[in-house]
Amino acid sequence: MSSYQLTLVTPAGKMFDGPVDFLTAPGSEGCLGILAGHAPLATALKQGLLAVKSEGRERCFNIGSGILETTREQGVLVLCDFAVEKNMKKTSET
Image 1 (cartoon, rainbow, N blue to C red):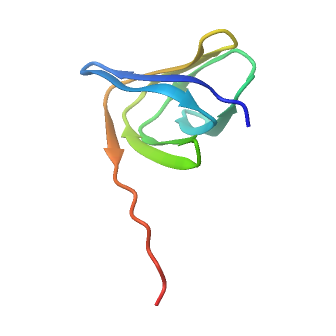
Image 2 (image 1 turned 180 degrees about the horizontal axis):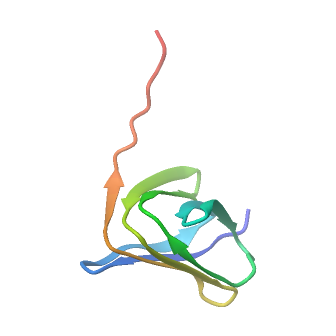
């Protein structure tokens, strides 16, 4: 799977900056997914969960409202009010 650069920025600074394979974001009009090569896009984000998949690993961030911009040359830029990484725990059934 192709990857692209994601930069996640808050007023406190960069929270994430690296290659990703896929992300889902809480768009103001509903959830959206971004793969490599996505058409250029700028959209508003609402508070919610930003999920990032990279190298078989998933990271999730609770984010505040903001904007998401995609370009073919520079990847994806997310600017938001805040971002807090969630600790994902695996659970097993007994």
